[in-house]
Length: 450
Image 1: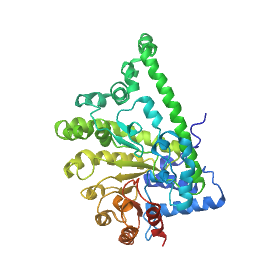
Image 2: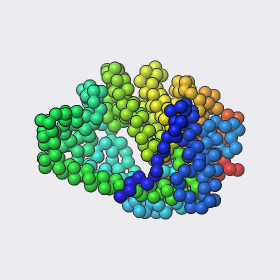
Image 3: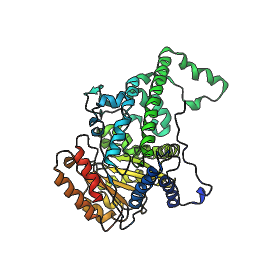
Image 4: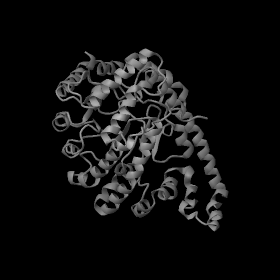
C-alpha cells in the first residue's frame, strides 16, 4: 500500500552553497513549476502557474502587485453547502471530494483551501482526552474544541528537558490517550544496550494490556491511512485542476504554545512565567530542534514550501512586552530561522491582536515570512511591516458572518487601498469562519479582480 504517492523534494547538488534566500527561491521555483502535479489539462497547468505567480509576487514583495491574491478562510460552510454534516467530515471520507471540487470550480479561488477529512475514528479508537468533537462530547454542527487541562505537571519539567521522547512515551501520552495508558510500562530505549537488557525491555510486550494497546494502535493506524489517502485524493484532484496549495499541511506549533495549549494549560504556563521561568525556557529550547526537524521532514516528504503555524499565547492579552521578548519571541524566531535555513517560508497565524508585538517581530530578515493577522490594526501593520514582510488578513469574522455585502466590499476595498503602495499583501478574513454565505465568499474573491 503506497501511503506517500508524492515524490517529495530533492535538494539540488548546490544546496550546501545556497543562502537561506537562495534555498527559499529554490523551493518556490519548484512550487511555481508544478513539479510532479498531474494536471487535468494544459489549461489547468497555465491557470495554476498564473495563480502561483500572483501569490509569489505578494510573498516576494513585488511593488506594485499586478493583482492582490484573495484567500477566503472557510470551515464547515464548504461542506454544509453540499448538505454534509460534521459527522460526515469526521467519518465518511468518501463524501468530501465532490463538494470540495464543486467549490473550487464554482468560485475559482486563488488557492486550494485545505478542507479534507478529519480522522474522528482515530481519535475515538485511541480515546483522546484533550479535545471534544462532534459525536464525542460535542453535537453535530461543531468540529472540535480543546478541553483545557493540566496534562503535564510542574514536576514534569526536568523529565521533559532531560529526554523529551521518554517523557512523551511514559508520561504524557498515557495521560492524554486512554488506550495508551499501558505505555507507562515501556522500557527507556537507551537502556537496551547489552545482551542481558533485552529480555526485560521486551517483557511488557507479552502483557495482555500492552498487547491490547498495540491492537488499538494498529486499528488507529489503518484508519489514519484511510483518512490520509482521502486527503491525498482531494489535494491531487484540486491541484490538478489548477489550484495551488499555500495554507497547510503541514501545520506546526511552536514549543511555548505546545506547552501552554495541551500540556501545562493556560493557567499552568502563566504561573510558570513567574514560578519556574528557567524550566519553561529550557523546555522550550529543548523542543525547538525537534519541531524544526519534524517540519523539514514533512515539507520534504510532501514537497511543500510553507509551514502554517498558528500562534496562540503570544497575543497581546496573554503577556507583557517584556515577557514576550523573554519567553515567546526567541523561541518563535528560532523556529522561523530553522525553517528559513532549509528554504521553508513560515506562514504565521497571529491569532487575536498583535498590536503590541509589531515592533518586536519587525526585527527579522526581509521577505522570509508571511504574517497572517486576525484582529491586529492593519494601519499599524502597514506602518511597521508594509513592504518588508508579506502580510495577510484581516477581514473580521463578524463581517463574513452577519455583515452586509456592501460593508464587506467596503472593508476589502479599504484594505486594498491601504496596501496599494507597499506590495506584499494578501486579502483574507482574519480567522476561519464556519457560518457565512456564498455571496460573502464571492465578494471576497472577486473584489480583487474588479
